[in-house]
Image (cartoon, rainbow, N blue to C red):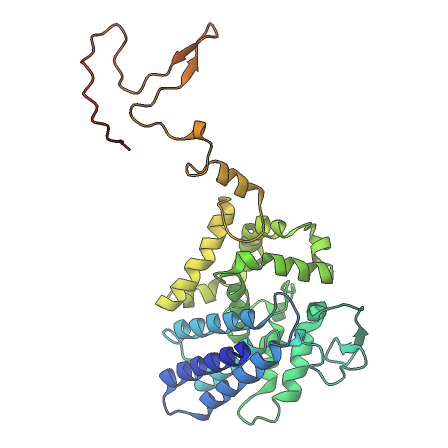
Length: 344
């Protein structure tokens, strides 16, 4: 079973179907272009050895992008050309990670910018080593590969890819969050952070960060550090750039599902609840406090259980009375007959 082909076929079918559902017979060739682009991109990225930036990530970003478009078109015009270029940009936004992608790659050297500069990677490096250069490499790819397709404005795609540069540069060229490039960036960020399986991918992302020196620079020593930093990262570094996209997502049921998953991850990490992914210290605390797994001495008391002792001022132990219990010096009714039934 060829998993890459299955993914490419299904993604292409969905993208073409989404376009046709919105635009019908208007520019029907655009649906064919989207189907073909899905095959080209997924088949290429399936060969990547980057641990995190793989076909799964590309598909998630693309599908979040579709949900953003579906919400956006409810409140403002989105032309067939807008839909085509936005969707292609989400498909190719990370294609620059692939070694051997660009004209000029070869002989152990890889293009790093639009001017054609190259570097030689160390032995054993993966595609993730090109992370610092993948935006420029993606722009080189689309200008070379898509320039021959009459319906596609390759410079428009390149501009959309440029806005996915992260951390977001502090300049006027990258500050717009509501236009097409800004929404492509939002699809990239939300597609990553709202991934239902994102917590279990922190290990892969951490090792990509190790390879390019980001983990060392940020002080991350293990994958659990990414989990601990997740809420701060979202509120400080991501949320300011995705507000218009969040409003678009909130207009459809599909978009609301993405937002629910996004905020679920934030909530779980903020409140240090048990989750899949790298082992965290609070996982052990949660395990110890779980009545199903706690030691017998920590189980909740049941009616009829002996009450635990409490310390008295003299240091001796006295039984802890139940709430509403009668005083010892008051008469008590005879206990009911036991029928042997286990009460819970």
